[in-house]
Length: 327
Image (cartoon, rainbow, N blue to C red):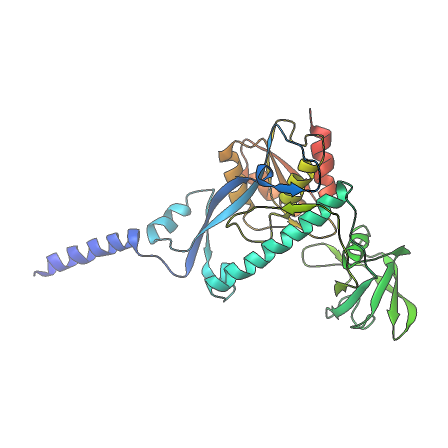
């Protein structure tokens, strides 16, 4: 075989490889499936209502077998983004990532259930305070609160659960001082803490908590089907869909509402990743409105071309927007 033939064959092999051989260190984020979640919700023990429109959960697809050709093409596609494998896995295996995301989805469902049922009038969790598990270094709670302390009130408001603590702190301006009452060693004491800002810009005290004697029995059974979708960012839309099923007013008002957002048990909506891909997926599905965490709203608006983007910081804000904009 001549050298010319060898060179031609090698070049052909390289071209072919660009289309079939994955690049192991690079992944491509793409617009994922959009799921109409409200119609699949199952409720027993309470009356349910239908809606004319739809509430969509949006997702991001991750192509872990992207070829060189696909990676180059993604660089010219505004709806896709190339990332390193480490940005997705954090050094873990894909199986470990999937297990962690399923755990996060389970937490999203729990929070959505508590927030939506509470907002719909089916009661709230109760308890006997919030026990301190740990404090973050250099946080307001560091050196002031101790593991084992039980917080019973914040800023003069009784707190029954860890979520109650988060709710009061979320409503407090950063830099403001709050009086925290704790039970410690059989006695009760008051300490003052200044509310700080975490890396995501949220108000925080820097304390890990668990609820004491937690109880929540709304006498309503709920099943929130999400299929194989995993991760933490479905909480907001799950809560809105469940609330809409349980209340007679139609939040959609015949519109198709898409969105995303991590939901905590106090109703706060936190930032997510891949908002550009989620907006693109919602637009492809024909959604009228996209609800985004306030921290992602600017990026979502920049990504959208024909969809109204609404930034929200809490479940209540999303609810007020939908109720106020309904026809």
